[in-house]
Length: 344
Picture 1 (cartoon, rainbow, N blue to C red):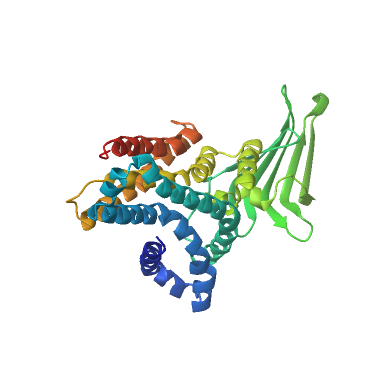
Picture 2: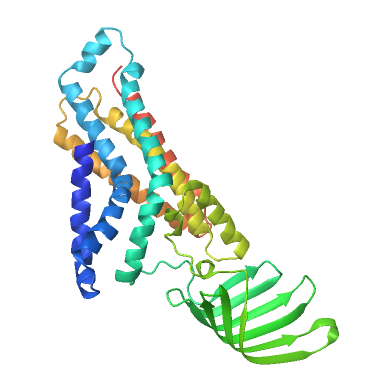
């Protein structure tokens, strides 16, 4: 499996470099930065992505060779059951699944953060913002913040409005032409600020050139991106999804689908192990080249269906966990049916 993984990672790097080499050169990325801040942190993510393919091909290769050598016939003649023969393969699949789960939760977030910072500087054309256009946030003190345009890199926005209300009425309304984050004071600076108070039936209007205030939101809260969930551990990822809901951020279903997709992904290792065993065991006369070609087709179909299910969850047509689980359940059912066709 290690050899197959190495070859696939090498191919992955070649394809990615051919697509992004012009951006690296145009934006001044040095060779050391490309290697150590982009590709070195990217390799663990590549390993996670291609592990099902590598494991599937490995199982197909070894089970196919055992079939050609009549090793299954010898084992069955000695009284071994097919379940006992499959057990070592299942154990290896579970070991890989636990390894990928640990890698995804504990090591990948740090590596993805390093790569994300590189991409923000040298591949910024990749737009990953969760929200397009206006930004809305529900603040803890019954206020709603809206910003017409927000620049996540400069940490400033234009045409900001703050509405204070309760269940029965609006108490105050404020607006500013520009809102900027002041890193030294950890506060927001509102320029050309105007506030209208409507409490107790009275009307009051205040105009100021500049106001510094705390709004219970940070620049990170206003710049959520689709890749955020991949830079967090499983525990932090769930807290992140809950925080999106509390802040009233739109498109919350996509991060939820991505989170559940990460949780279910390691199960694919067990599924492809069962698929590979059911496809190759006891089927003589089928060349290993054909088996590997079929394995690649099934593996990439598996990964494609997982990605195709995401938009259904993001659009609300499926619950986030269902959008993440259904592809695995479909291929698990197919693997079970295929395994039952293996000659006993």
